[in-house]
Image 1 (tube, helix red, strand yellow):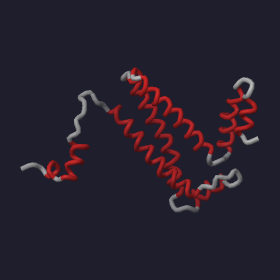
Image 2 (cartoon, helix red, strand yellow; image 1 turned 180 degrees about the vertical axis):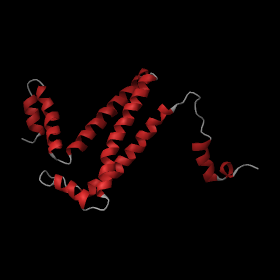
Image 3 (cartoon, one colour; image 1 turned 90 degrees about the vertical axis):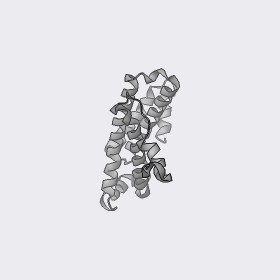
Image 4 (tube, one colour; image 1 turned 120 degrees about the horizontal axis):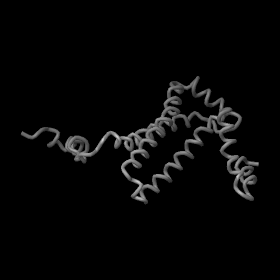
Length: 167
């Protein structure tokens, strides 16, 4: 008699996708980091949406809204810490994913590799914006340093920095 997981329609889908999934013989633990990146991304999106519900996007009140989330919102401190530490874990996973790609020669597939580089740059920019949002002293000076790097652009650098800062 066939097992229930191979005959029941819903269990058959799960069985084919998770249990009896064919895998190459040379697969190792290094291949988990792409999936972990997806899990981290989902966690970051969910915690970020929760934090955005209580965040005030104003220079005068941004820092106090973060303090409000940590002190007054139920489990806000936990969600904020999950979000902050999740960003660090996301970057650990992304660097391990890149390392695996370098080790196994994934850079030879130029289109895929270039898309990965573009995604890495987008993730770094998004992380920078997330670092600046609380608008504390570390956020302010981090934003100052990064935006002042643009002043090295010939001819328009200083005007570009002034424009970004809204001046």
